Amino acid sequence: MDLFKQLTQKGQIFLGVHTPIISSGMTWIGNYELVKAVSKHGAFPVLAGGHIGHVSLTILLQQVLFNFRDFPIFVAGGIATGKMIAHLLLMGAYGCQLGTRFVMTEEYTAHAKFKDAFIKARARETIATPQCDSRLPVVAVRAVNNCGMRNFGQLRLNLLKKMETGSLSREEAQFEVENYWMGALRRAVVDGDVDSGSLMAGQSVGLMHDVKPMCAMLDELVDDARDELERVCGTLGGK
Image (cartoon, rainbow, N blue to C red; front, side):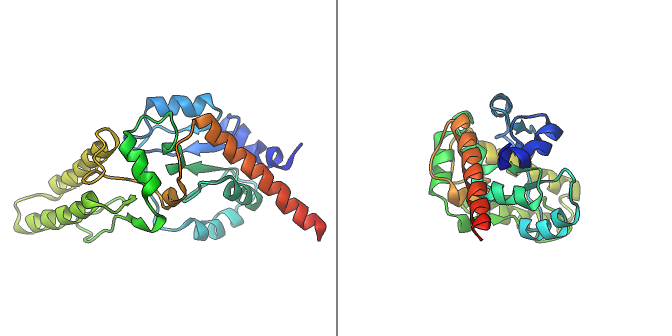
């Protein structure tokens, strides 16, 4: 049994899939077509809305993964290469969850301009939505900074002013926030409006260079992970 197969066996059994790689939940992105393709090619699909956490993966690895051995933990956050997956498996992860990487597949039915924007974007151009006032909580997402992202900041300021004057309730303001994001994301994904639409993406967008068939993308992740494990084992064996 090769090391990659050995390290992924528990994740495979737990998820009931060939490869313990999870396609994360993504509004307007994780549609039926994508879910079907992910499942067809042996990975684990998720059909749900997607958000980021407030603690980085680097910290979570130390707080959680290292302290709960032999427990089904699947890690997420900026993962886009087989090499990274290999090292996370060595750390004890059962598998990994990827979002942005799945967007850049032919099976994902997004507008060509949306995918092209991902190819052009740099990691540092993605920003997380800040919460400017606890009266109007925002479940954080990360997106490429564009006109749509800046408009969102102005929208929240305007909504807070209306709440202060009593012309808008907190529930109504919260609805406006969620409605904006849903509409802005649809404009980008479906209509190709990459200026005022929402380009939700992780920082791994800086590693996106092309669009591939899903089968080729998953094969590349697995092959690169296997090669990295062999390299690491060879290095350690040489010492």
